[in-house]
Image 1 (tube, protein in one colour):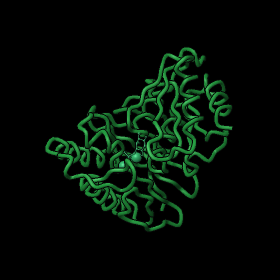
Image 2 (tube, rainbow, N blue to C red):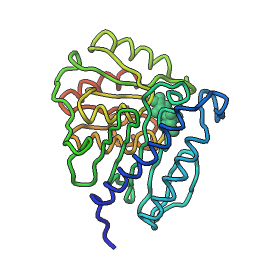
Image 3 (tube, rainbow, N blue to C red):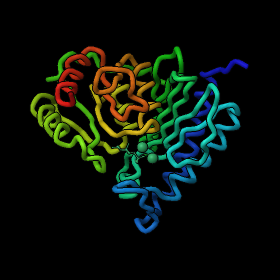
Length: 265
Ligand code: IPD
Ligand code: CA
Ligand code: CA
């Protein structure tokens, strides 16, 4: 059976909005006492888990043959061809502290290729999406990466190391370099939102290490469909499972990546 990715993508946007309403409502009555600790600075609550359960149930109805790579482990079914990569709440630390920047991130892989991405940033009601062969969209309007050609004119996003400090010295040197040689850096606290903002031209670029596939799959795909580039720190293709990502507009990407490479080589 051939799958209509465009129709499926619209359904995933509706599903994300529906689950987003649940997350937003729970956020209004949430207290720190409801937080569970998974690891150092790694938090979760019934909100992440319930959202993932709802997403997995509905996605299994929409594409029964697909498997899952889902952060909270609701389903570990592996699909022969299709696999969903899900973060039911990206930006949990923001969520538990009441900071309004968090998102649902859903990517779809066919074999080893991404073929769809949906990121729903709940607080601004912004749905970013793309499917194989499409442009990238934000709430129905086409989006593109910027054409800014120089690192010196760029605004960057990153995520700070918060549990894996193995490369913190290289990270801090790189951070210093970018502080001195760009318009500045932002740390939103949701990697999916960072990538969505690269896709729609709010940031020129984004980089972070120790991310998981569910943090980056949908966003990396949307950036590419919006005309941008995505690699790992070596400039190669292992950015979904390789725990390092550089994403940015095509015009400044080589200069941006060169600086990252030099600091992490
Ligand atoms: C986190 C966010 C954050 C990034 C972390 C992720 P979570 O995801 O994307 O921006 O810096 O590395 O783990 O835990 O909120 O889903
Ligand atoms: Ca995440
Ligand atoms: Ca999460």
